[in-house]
Image 1 (cartoon, rainbow over the protein chains, first blue to last red):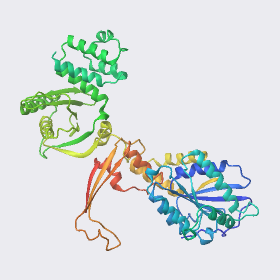
Image 2: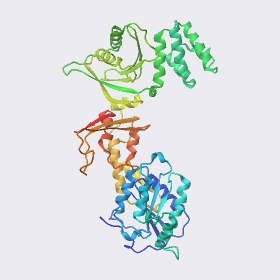
Image 3: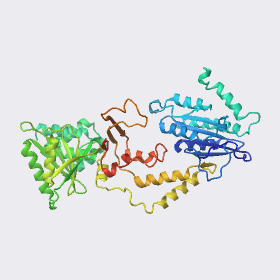
Image 4: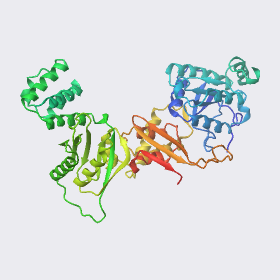
Length: 180
Length: 339
């Protein structure tokens, strides 16, 4: 079982690589497409994976940001993310992991409660983003945001680091339970 | 033509949508072409129906003609009924008799009439050696009720009959008896298999659609499909689990085949199993009685939905055999017990 570490490899020149983890390709693929359409100075690469660990026999660039996609309509999708998280090195959680939750728009279809993802994100001290990926407008906005986050995580934005960003996002958006 | 028949024809024509009116009347073949031409089909439906009933009256339509019209309407709208599948069996030693449609019809009718006295039975031959039978039930002292008929579709020389579900459950045993005797079978059993789509039931029962076996050269189209996908894809998107995806595709294809699935719209599982858990000492673990629950799956096209579960990443491949055995076992109502 290989654990994914952020500092295993040297960064590629001007390259920024994001890893999207989720079972449903139908959600990930359009998001990846929208991200690549964004105007961006860095060379973007999007890796899609159903789950972690990743197959070990391939060469891949350094991964700068991991986004776990949870679909509220399926318990299986949450379970898959929970299991995949065990294969991520702790140093990744210093700002290079995010949770993206989709499907909250159709309440009647939800089989995962929002609180359980909230708790998950808090347990891993990582930002939690909500977006209905099936709606194109929302997806494009989310893609913009992810590209921006990725650039920061890859170190392409002077003056701000992944850790910086993490602390900024935490204070504004999801205060921890103990903070309340 | 008496009033009952006139009313029956009127109600049947009123059911027919305007767009199908001409096709159905032509298929009925009771009114001639020239008679139909005298009628203005652009009028309001009520007056059109009035004209048509007048014409039928001139031609002295009887109950049988009216029932034929009703059968044709039902043939066009077969998905409005829920169809049950019945399977008949012969005694092991019995010879295969020559099947005579005429004899089948007359003995079928005779059995029902002897038992009930008042019953109207109408036959219409359909494609593929099928016969549609419409039965309007009555009793010893009551005229048959034309508005709650039962439809039977029987494919001659096969052990299967499709019967539209109705609330008149009491008539089913008699109907089964008439079918077995007329078709020279021995026993009839209702299968746990029903759907709105008669044609799909038929395809599954007679195994008329591609199931698996023709997959010996299936590897080539699969690879081609993947290549096609790669070309459309941005090279900056990398699928980490491409091997796993191929496996899921292959497994799904092995189970469901290449072709579109027949349409079913529900499957039901009745569980009567004991509660099992790895964690001991649950409240439910000590129950002696089985845990009863009912799981229902419904979808406009259930098999197609099941087929796309694994490729969409919603379930693991291969799916549970309980879900994929529907076409092989020819049932969609299951009862699951311990062992």
